[in-house]
Image (cartoon, rainbow, N blue to C red; front, side, top):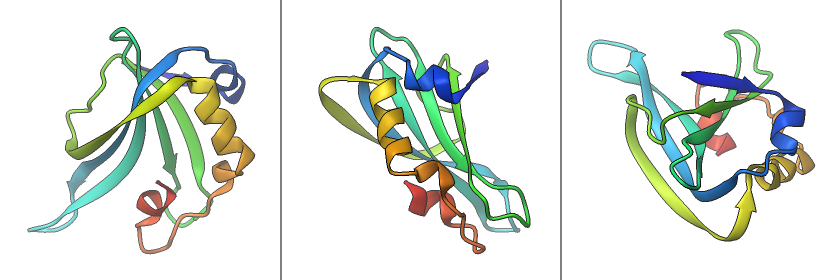
Length: 122
């Protein structure tokens, strides 16, 4: 079960992160021999605390990116095709990652029309 988090919640979230996980996962078949993929960031929380998913998406026909933060009980989604883990150095919290994203205005990302926007956002 996932819980939607708002901007103020993530900007104040003191949960410690152990790893940043980049995940490419399938969103289902796109054709007879291909599938659609999507990319997300998961902030793995200390002490088996699950994860916080950082996801950018757009509605069909509108390239304006929408940044979503959700708390997950798991650390790896069942739809994962491949993932890469990066161990954090020092004490890093969810709020630190959120502040970095917002300071660079990455929540204002425009997705590509070709469907690869989430990958480039990574």
